[in-house]
Amino acid sequence: MAAQDLIQDDGDVCIHVEANVTTADPPSLSPGGLPNGTADANANTVKTGENDKEESKICCFLKEKRLVQTLSNRLQQQCNYVKIAEDHGKSLPTEWWKTGVAFLYAVFNLFFTTVVITVVHERVPDKSLNPPLPDKFFDYIDRVPWAFTVTEVNGLILVALWTVQWIFLKHKAIVGRRCFFLIGTLYMYRCVTMYVTTLPVPGKHMVCAPKLNNDSSGKIWRILRLISGGGLSMTGTHLMCGDFLYSGHTVMLTLSYLFIREYSPLWMWWYRWACWFLSASGVVCILLGHEHYSVDVVVAYYITTRLFWWYHTMANTHSLRRDPNCLLSRTWWNPLFNFLERNVQSVVPIEFSWPINLPSSCRQRYKMVELGRDE
Image (cartoon, rainbow, N blue to C red; front, side, top):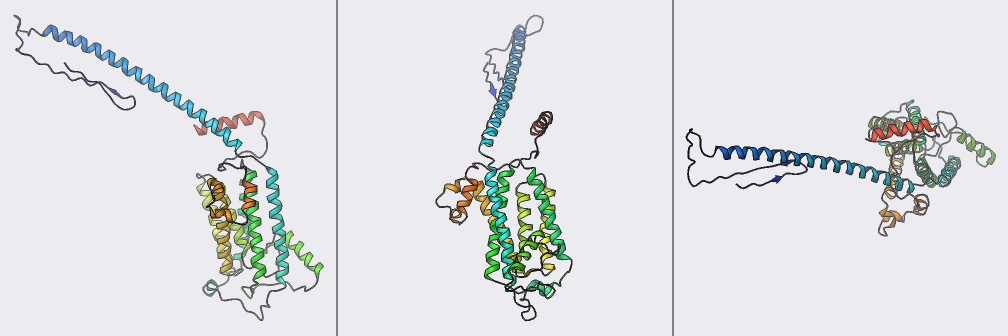
């Protein structure tokens, strides 16, 4: 008899027995007509039963061993998760003071934008003498008077949604300084483009405030009035012309959506699509209202998206920061980037937390809910 045991993969044990019996002579019959090998057959049956019991014991042992190994692996994974979470928290310091610096940077550039708008307004060509520039979109689509109001309403909704989302982010200090830096940089670029090239009004419907020439006090009051109204036409405080290249409304619509999408979980796809619709429809309504040339919107979209993607590529890919061949490190804002992101040594996870400290009992229940959700 030749026996061979084959153990299949991962704990599924199968005992395969092959028996080859070779006899020289045929079995002789007993007087009762039974073969002489009946006793041997009974013995073999007993041995087979014993072998089955041994095999079942081996199977049970291997199953228990597999169960213990599985529990050990799960425990090791949990320990590794806790260790990674602790290291992860250490690699994402808050540094609110840097967020404050970025906030001041954004406020300064927004204020400087109102100053440049006031200066450029004095140079805008008279629309009675200089007609609007040719624009293909305006050639095919007539002006819709209420469209620009939709743009500003959509922009306010997106900014409000992003503000609420940012408040509930766990790492709001890091995300906040990224947002403030991008806002400040984009509006600084806008100051440059508005000042170097002054375009005529895109439509005869636009009402521009009279020019003040050398009236400095009047210009200061206009700056304060523009700031008080948030630069919105629907508040009746923005009656100055010249801030066309590029579109500030497109910047805010696009940037709000990009931050909402970047720092929202994948399962909130419906939220992302709703914000995309608000942003896209708001941009289209800018053109429907003939408040900006098509090139104003295109340039604003291009600069906003590229600056956002370049910054977050550098922030999320840490090997690029130390790579001498990375051309993104040659940007003029790279020193500011290193200042803001120096101590952020990992990708910022999308995690939410309550903006205020909860009582200990509530925190314990919240942790239990989060633990159950992870499992």
